[in-house]
Length: 97
Image 1 (cartoon, rainbow, N blue to C red):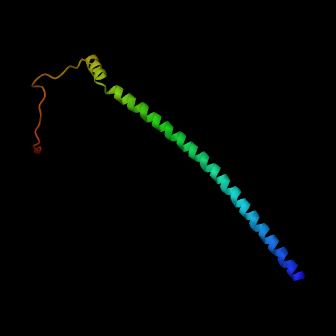
Image 2: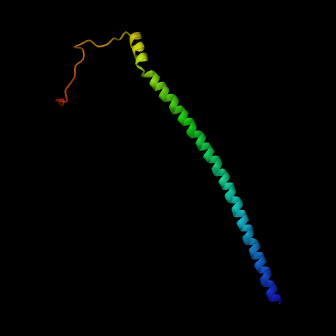
Image 3: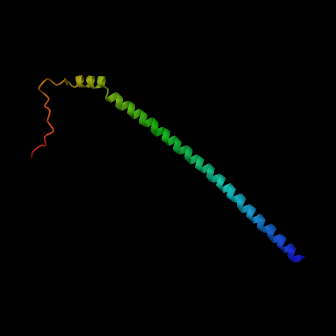
């Protein structure tokens, strides 16, 4: 009878330890999930900032390369369109050294 009682106590203690281990594992996994969520949020904010910066840079590039602005800047620097004969086109012939 005492042996049967000892087996039940051992089984009860063992099941308690296993239950505690499973509960602690569940809590640890939930904490990891929350940490991953925060990291994901930070990465998303970083990606959004980089996308906004890229959009601003593309807008600035388009503004700087607009024909109107280039014409205005060329006039300010005293440049003018090339006359006929001022531009030479080279063929696809290789250059001899």
